[in-house]
Amino acid sequence: MLLFWRRTCGVDIQQSIKLQIMKRKNGIVFAALTVTCLLAMLSIVALGGAAKTEGSNSWVVMGLLIGLLVVFGLLHFTNRYPYALPYIAIIGNAAISFVTGMQNESISNVFAVYYGLILAAVYMSLWPTIVSLVTSSSLLAYFVITQNGAPGIAGNESTVFIYYILICAMLIMLLVVATQMSKKLEAFGVEAGQLFAQQKDDKERLLANAAAVSSNMSLIATASEENSGSFAEMSTAFQEIASGANSQVDSTLSINRSVQETGRMIGDMLDSLDELKRKTDGTSKRSMEGSDKMDTMFRVTNEFQQSIETMSREIADLTQTLQEVTRFNESIQQIAQQTNLLSLNAGIEAARAGESGKGFAVVAQEIRKLADMSGKSADEISQKLGVVSQQAAATSGSMTRIAEQMKHNAAVTLDTRQAFQEISVSVTELNEMASGYNDMMGAVRSANDSIQESTEHFASVSEQSSATMQQLSATLETLLRQNMLMQQHIRETDAKIKQMVQ
Image 1 (tube, rainbow, N blue to C red):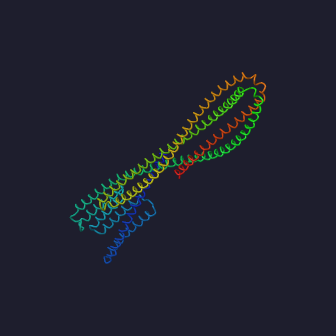
Image 2: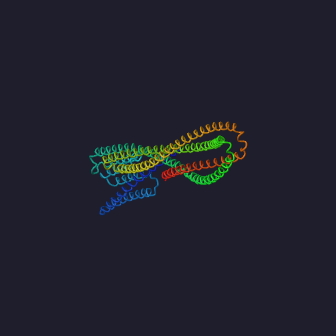
Image 3: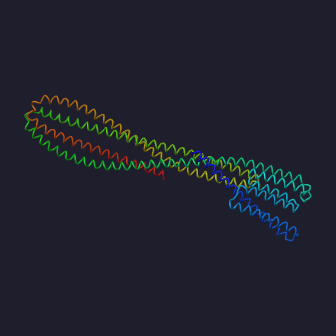
């Protein structure tokens, strides 16, 4: 479907160019007919003293000229039957030349035949040229045969035919060259239309992709800002909880000192064993909680890294699309340069042809102007594509650096998670050893066990809560800083993408 549309676009452009060229040629012929009528009118006025019969015949010819001019001008300026006007002009001129030759025998009748060939040279088309050759040959043969005694014709019949044949041969050669050039220009028109359609389609896809990326970046930035607010609120809450837990720890330690004072007979060994047990329990729980949090952070980091890599691939695809568009634009520049050279060669050939090539020179000049305009437009497009490519390359570099930083963070998170697992194993072994000693000291602890266990448990929970809150607060502060840095990169990327869309 897209290929059919591109071909249709190229054909429409080609038909439009052909119609404009035909209108300009018709305008030139209309101007020539107008000048002919004015010259004929001046001749009739200058011959005011001629015979009455001859004057009436001149006015008949003048009436035919005016009638041809009116019909041609009416159809031309109303844009009706533009491709039929060449035949009207050639056949009408032949009829007027025949009437004039019937009334006046002179060498000027031969010049009227050449005037018909000049009209055909203006159009440089196959069928108008054939019609002109047929009518001109018929008129010339008639004038030479029936008016061989006229001044300027008598004794020069062979010369007249030789000049006529040379002019016809030159006209046919010009027609062949013009036909070949026309076919090439038509092919160029089709290619230009297809390239224009392809550029338009690529531009629409590029803008659609850039708009979608910009919309996604805006959503990500909004979600990141909301996460920053949530992190800040959670950090404040954790700090308040940690402060309360510290107060509870102070109270619990005070109670524990009172209990230890009553059980000092148990000795330093029991105190040391209890302290070891308490610390191993707290460390084990904290290591497990830390391992869980690192697992969560590792998963979130991997997801964010995948999103960054996806965005980087999309930007790489965008850069490749821009490079393809740049190559298409370079093809347009080459076509414009070739067209300019062809039009220059055509102008040189038209200049060599003299008066017969004036119409073709005008066409060559117009084609050269169109080629210059196409080249300038292609240069401007190339400059703009260069700017967009630089912006896309800068964005791709930023995304690559972000992806590398995320990989580094993921590696650090993985190492930290492994360290937590090793700590958990060590604490578990230490806890098992403390449990063995605790069984051995069970009989010694029985007298003071109930009170001491309560205070130790409460102190342990308070310390764990305080330490956990402090760790969570530090983790949230780290996430908050990383989130703010990510927001800054997202805003910069979004701004660059919006510049591309605009």
